[in-house]
Image 1 (cartoon, rainbow, N blue to C red):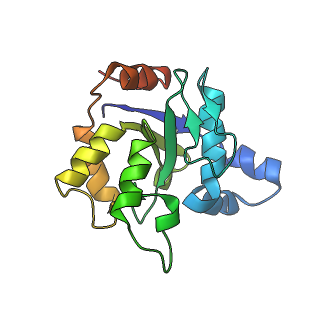
Image 2: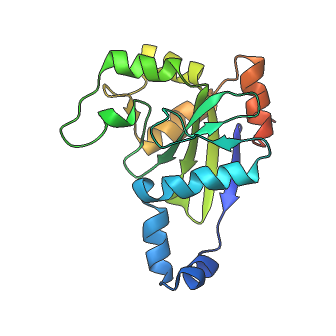
Length: 177
């Protein structure tokens, strides 16, 4: 597929280092709430010039080498969402204004398909794609899309509309062929 790269993990080595069973490692690494912090750090250390946000409440997760802010999300069995984290979960509701404000503050999303652990595909998605998909009704009412729909319909449609997004994607090692 285009516009992706892969990160790999050695589940045996991780289990030994943490002194747990391989099944425990799989359970942890396939839970988006748990593994997101590790993936953010892995992306930072694997890609020169990228930095972590100064705090968890920063509104973004990574800074690219040009200063662009990127949100890191996991693609889980339940899909992937593009709205702010404070709009996700029990009793929380989607808010269009908050969604638009979130998208206005980031260059895009870096999405990791954690359901493939220990070999995970990573997609760099400039925000213009999310805005286009939302306007076309390709995201659900709460700006969430299923994993299968994302992989089948949206991944082939990822576009890099501006030079800065291309530079950021290239610095992440995205396959543009």
